[in-house]
Image (cartoon, rainbow over all chains, first blue to last red; front, top):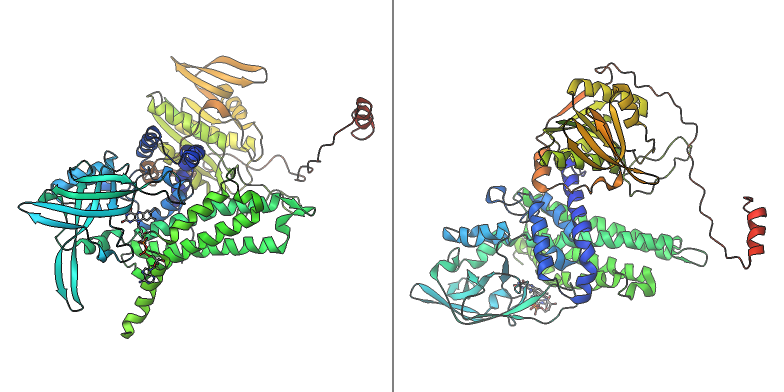
Length: 386
Length: 249
Ligand SMILES: Cc1cc2nc3c(=O)[nH]c(=O)nc-3n(C[C@H](O)[C@H](O)[C@H](O)COP(=O)(O)OP(=O)(O)OC[C@H]3O[C@@H](n4cnc5c(N)ncnc54)[C@H](O)[C@@H]3O)c2cc1C
C-alpha cells in the first residue's frame, strides 16, 4: 500500500495551490467585506481557470474537460477548499449529471458548460422538502409535446449567476411494494424561460459572496426536449452522477482545515504569554496535536473513498463516512483555532472567524450529518433485515 | 535558437531550514523540495521565448540525484520540451556542475544557456560564470530583461546602483534575477503532457567529468538569534552603548 502522492499528483496540488494563492487569495478581503464577487472579477477567474485547464477539471478529456481521475479530483478540490468559497466557485466544475445529456442537449448545455460559456445550477430542495427530497411538490405536467412546471425551489446555490438549472420535479405517482411513491424527473431549464423567476435568497452565515436563490415556476412551459434522462428516473440519474458530490464537500473541508491548521501552529509558536510561546503549554500543544490528527484522519477517509470511487466501487457508506467526518472535523478544528487565537480569533481583521463561520454549513448541505449517519446505519443494519 | 536551461532541486524556499545537530549541514530528511526559484524564472523565460517563436526547443538539465527527475518534470509541465538528468550521488559543487553542464552543452549545442543567478540553498552565485568561462562564451548575469536581435542579446542587468544594459554575442550564458518574469503555474494539460516528454539520463563518467568536491564544509551553524531592539533616552546614552555594548565606535 503506497500512501505517497505521485510526482504528477504533487505537481497538480502545487499548481492549483499556486493558482489559489495568486489568483484568488488577493480578492478574499473584497469578497468578505462586500459579500459579492464583482462580475468582471468572476469573468477574470473563469478566463484564468480556462487558460490553466482547471475549468471543468471533473469532466472527461474527450468532452474538453480536465479528465482528472477520482483521486486527482479529490486533491484538486482539496486545494480549492482553501480560498474563499465564492471565489473558487468560478473555477467551475459543471454538475456531473450533465453527462446524462443526449442529442441536442449536449450542444446546448453540456459542452457550453465545459467551455465556460454557460453555467449550471442544481434545483432539488424546496421549502417543504429538504432532507426528504422525494417529498418535493414542484410538478411538471405533460401538455402536448411540452411540460408545464409549477412550484418553488429554495436554497439554490449560485442560481444568480447560472444560465440554466437542472430541475427536479414530480411527474406522477407509482405503486411500489412499500406503497405509493412520487415519480421524479429531471429537466434542463433556461433561466430566461417565461414563467421562471429567480429571486435572491436569504443571507447565510457561511461563505460570503456565495449566493443562494429561490426559483419560482408559474405555468413555466418547457419543451419535451428539456427532459434529462428518462421520465420518472430523476433520482436514478442523480445517483449515477451525483454520488461523488459528498466527496467534494469532504475534501474541501480537509483543504480548509489544513489552511487553518497552518495559521494555528504559527500563532501558537509566535504568541507569547507568561514569557513563552503559548504552544509550549500542553493545554495548547495538545489541541494542536488533536487537530492535526483529526485532519489526517479526515484526509485518509476522503482519499480512500475517492480511490474506491475511481475503482468503481465506492459505497454510499464510503461517501457518507467521509462527508460526516470531514465536515465535523472542520467544525472542531476551526473552533479550536479560534480558541488558540483568543480574542483575535473573533475579529474580522483575521480570517479565523470566517473559517469558523464557513465551517457551519458543511454539516448541513449535501445531506446533513444526521442523514449521513442514517445512511451508514442503514447500510450496517439492512443486511440483517433490521 | 535552441535553449538549454539548467535547474536545481533545493529545499523549498518557504521551508524553515534547520541545521543538523552535528553541524555537518542542514536537515533534508522529510523536507519539502522544489525547483530553485531563480531556476524557475529561467525556465519561464525560455518557455516564453519558445511561445514568442524565438526559441525552437527548450531542453532542461539538472545535475543531482535520481529525485531531481521530479524537478525536471516540473519544468516540463511548465512547457519545456525535454529533459536531461546528469545523475550523481556525489556532493556537487559549482565547478563540478559547470564542468558537467559544459559536457551537456557540447552534446546539445544550444545557442543560449539560461540559469538562475544562484541557488537559494548555498547562494554560491558561481555556476553560470564558471560555465561561461569554461565554454569561452559571453555571459550576462543578474538579467532582468532579455531581448534577442540578430546573433546577439540585449540584456538588462540588476546591479547595485540600478540597471545596466549590455549587449552580448551568442552563444551566451545568461543568469536570471528575480524581476526577469513571474513564473507560471503549470496548466493541467501541460501537467498531463509532462509525463510523456522524454528525460535522458547520463552520468558524470559519460561526460568525462570528475565531480569530486574541491571544497570541504567545516561547519554549518544557525545564524545568531536576533536580539530585541532597545530605546535610548539621549544621544549621550546612544554613544555610550555604541562604544561599550556594541563596540562599534
Ligand atoms: C447555502 C445553501 C446552499 C444550498 N444549495 C443547494 C443547491 O444548490 N441545490 C439544492 O437542491 N439544495 C441546496 N441546499 C439545500 C441543502 O442540501 C439542504 O439544506 C439540506 O439537504 C437539508 O435540508 P433542510 O435544510 O430542509 O433541513 P431539514 O431536512 O428540514 O432538516 C432539519 C433537521 O432535521 C434533521 N432530520 C431530517 N430528517 C431526519 C431524519 N430522517 N433523521 C434524523 N434527522 C433528520 C436534519 O438532519 C436537520 O438537523 C443548500 C442549502 C444551503 C443552506
